[in-house]
Length: 220
Image 1 (cartoon, helix red, strand yellow):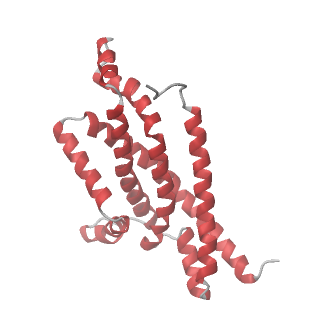
Image 2 (cartoon, rainbow, N blue to C red; image 1 turned 45 degrees about the vertical axis):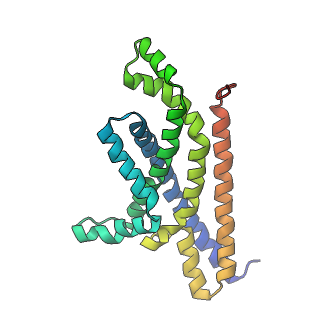
C-alpha cells in the first residue's frame, strides 16, 4: 500500500507523462518534416535558399533551447504575438529539432553518389522527381540513426517545457518536490519515467530501421 505522498506523486507524474507525450509526438514529427525540407534545400537549393536555410540551422543549433523558448513565450508578446505554453513549447522544439535533423539529412543526401542523380535525369526524371524518388529514399535510410538519436534528445529536453509554464512530467514533479521538500525521491522517479520513454523510443526506432532496411544497401 502506497503512502499518501507516493499516491499523489504517481498521480501527478502520470498526468505529466500524458502531457509530455502530447508534447513530444507532434514536436518529433514536425522536427523530422522540417529537417527533411530544410536538409533538401540546403543540399539542392539555389545559393540564396541555401544561405537562408544555413542561417536558420546555425541560429537554432547555436543558441540554447531554453533561450529560444523564452523568446517564443515571453518575448513575442512584446510585438503583439501571444502563444499558449503548449504552442510555444511545440514550436520551439520543432524548430530546434528540425535544425539538427536538417544536418543529418543534408549529410545523408550528399553521401549519395552523383551518378544516381545523373542516371535518373538521363531516364527522363525531372530534378524534383530525381530527388524525391531516387535520392531521398536512400538518404532517409542513411540518416535514420542520426535522426533517431535527435528524437531521443528531444524526449529528454522536452523537460524544459516547464520554463514556459507548461506542466509536463518535470513540471508536475518539480511542483510536488517543492511542496514536500523531497527532491531526491521525486527526481529519481522522474528520471525513471524518462528512461522508460527513451527505451520505448529506441525500440520503436530499431523496428523502423529494420522495416526499411534493404539487404546490401550502403555496402561498397
